[in-house]
Image 1 (cartoon, one colour):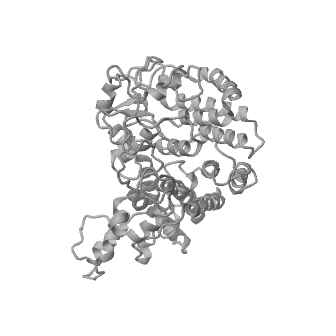
Image 2: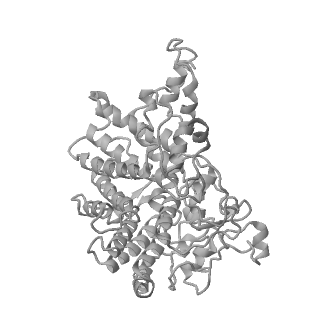
Image 3: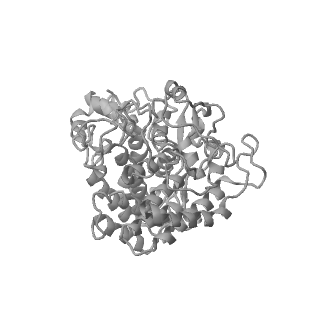
Length: 525
């Protein structure tokens, strides 16, 4: 393999399987201009690397595969499939993590390396060293959390050393070590940020507002430490201690809508909402979600809720409480045999799946729900009812802010972002859910409210469900994996083929030690 090609591959941050494939090639030099495209781009500015990492993470679930993006949304039963039902019946296909590493983590590591090594005045024009490194560490932690949550053990400490050390076959770090690294990155990145220094350019999340980046880091810390609660349940243990430290940090956490993290969706700049690529005719909103939001007294209601939740008017295509969901988890033959039909069923509202629809990374409502759960566990002395109320009310508020953009009548075709605001209903609904704690328990109600609040945030919702067990979802009736809601994604096929010895070590961290979607990752064991 000519050296020029190898260098080009590195600069373009190819996926891990392609890097692995290069391991068998010779590193020969045929001069720097051998077969080089005179119109090609061979370098990137660091602000472009930062923008690219943020945009790529916001646009997709790690790979361009539609199935991969939709799987967590189907696993948590927000939607049902109509004809092509492989994902909702738990077909055990390999996952894909190439873009997490190649287009995101590699970008951020390149920034960290460059700004850690006596940066030149030229690159300091794009942001001070502490701020470029700090933001990159925080966002790298966010990406690695998703990878670890979806797969288990994964490349972390050696994941990107191929760029500088010709290390093409990275080892798999234990999930516990990855989480410890995530927590360390969030704290060190947060503490490096200096509002007196030049803000990072290329920041298309907060546009250089370092106070908001600090609040985001602390809010992710609350989320990440709660994810370890099965392993460290004690109020004085590792997870609770880190949770309380983040909550007490002087930078604060996300508590208001203006501090929330939302991706800058911009179709005109080749940055569309990824769900716009899905054919609406292939999906319906699930009956399980619809009946849970209606508070129905039937078996499709998977929550303890018995109060009308007007978030349904935003979530479902009809724009009213009259939505009809499709029962989840049937192939077409079994659906008909069970006496159900797709006729008259609703899709997810265009508010959430147009090419310009907003997408969030972290909201105030979700942060308050995490605080409510920590309080219910005895980790903090914050009042559970007040935290739960704030979590629900702020979720209503942010939905209005991003999905009800005018007061004209809702119309799925002509005015999908119109309709009535739901915020006036928030306080009454929240009070009803607080009252449900007396009969159903705080952790159940909070877990169910997280499910509703994380609508279409498939990866976060699936991760919460696996940890908490709420809501009480049942496996797909037509499941092909023995009837288990997937606990993880299978490792990518490229890892099996090209990084097999490390892949096999990664499998040993699962329970049982099999690379299947029914095996549990470390924090789930």
